[in-house]
Amino acid sequence: MIVYDIVVNGELKETIQPRKNRLKEIYAYMLEQTRLMKAKYGENVVITGRIVY
Image 1 (tube, one colour):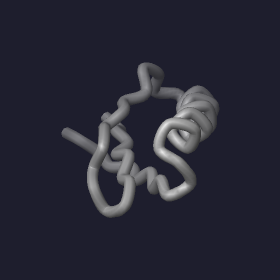
Image 2 (cartoon, helix red, strand yellow):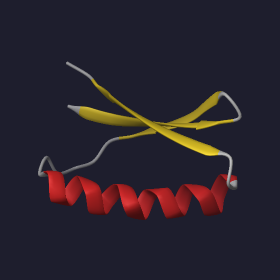
Image 3 (tube, rainbow, N blue to C red):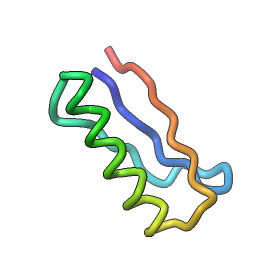
Image 4 (cartoon, helix red, strand yellow):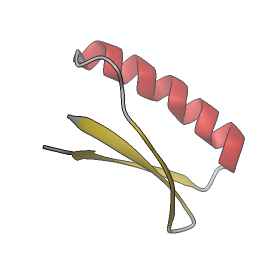
């Protein structure tokens, strides 16, 4: 399972998990989430992905 951590100024703010497993759907979801997170937290947002077993 792939999850994405939203990090602002070195501090973990939230973790999001795509509902779908297809790469195209995850990509579209993350583009939308990136725009939303930049609007919510400002331009200093880093999104890192990780795999959880």
